[in-house]
Amino acid sequence: MEKVSKVVLAYSGGLDTSIIIHWLRQNYDCQVVAFAADVGQFELAGRDVHTVSDLKRKAVAAGASKVYVQDLKIEFVRDYVFPTLQANAIYEGKYLLSAALSRPLIAKKLVEIAKREKADAVAHGCTGKGNDQVRFELTFKALNPELKILAPLREWEMVSRQEEIEYAKRYKIPVSTGKEKPYSIDRNLWGVCVECGPLEDPWKEPPEDAYQITTPAEKAPSKPVYLDIYFRQGIPTRIDGKSLSPVELIKKLNRIGGAYGIGRVDLVENRVVGIKSREIYEAPAATILYLAHRELESLILDRDTFHYKELIAPRYAELVYCGLWESQLKKTIDAFVYATQKKVTGTVRVKLYKGNLWVAGRKSPYSLYEKSLATYGAEDKFDRTSAQGFIDLLGLPLEVKALMDKKE
Image 1 (cartoon, rainbow, N blue to C red):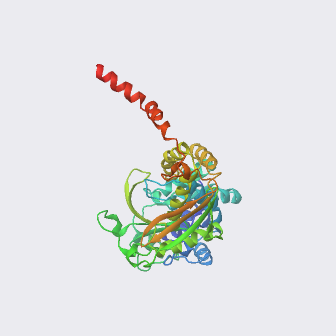
Image 2: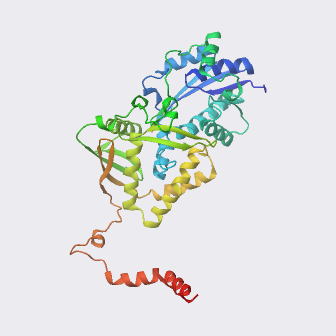
Image 3: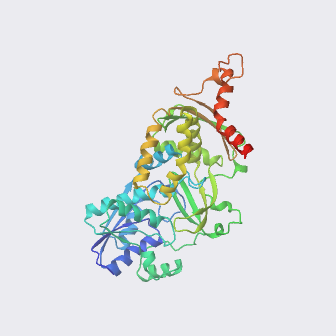
């Protein structure tokens, strides 16, 4: 083992990170500082850790010399969620990047705490074939390439949960050893990611107990609900005329959307490391806001800008998914997106009904929609006589090519 004096660990309170604290101390003879970020995951029923005090107690009992727990929900939404919403970034057409967005923020805080604690290393509890190891480590490298990076799950000889439980018992590490759930669940304010167990067969429909925050469509309310969502420069700020903080706005849309079965996704995705993985996602608020934001842009942005944004949105999503939040390309795209949002202000009305989501209306003081040009009624002001010349010029290359082909 290379020499390490103090390491800051991304700590969740689960089995892996609890025994990692002891394992690091035993194998590296170092101090371990535990860091946990609250990005909304503590609201999920059924997790091993429900409160901040529980988390701190478990980390200290496992051998941590110090424990940091920071409420990052506001920063998470403001600096990570909303910029991605403004970019309309969706990975492989389905995934709204909930877990992928939290990792660079957590990694950033680990680096900051490492500096404060004068630590020479950071560590995480990610597996060797997941995406999160990439997201954490690329951010570490971008922000402080001098820090050593430790990944115990890629180093130790334990390969099963049972072996980890036996390790915890042997060293009297407090962990939950109750009935094992078949799923691996990751949650934050922006969404829930669920994998493993029955989901590993892509032919099988996801069992209902895999879903955490959404109601099945057939059990959703029998009457639709309408919501008016107001955006200012691409950022949602009001629902039905009531101003809400970013965190409360997302929580409210998660509650309403979840009750109506909005935001369920079943995806076989291409992981960063090259394998395919089947996961299900729940993101009611994100689903509603993405649809509303894009519809508002369709009303306000000119054709070329709107179309170009549509082209780069998948690339932006890929950069986020692959852990390149701190990359120069991603930051450059951010500058473009920011410029496009200056007039994305207005209201979008959405309709929710039994797992379905529609836009019912949109309006903006910056709308480029001109009824007198679009209408087929008597008030039509469009000069239809100009269409012939427009079509002739647009079709000229096609016409010339066809004439040349005929000669040949």
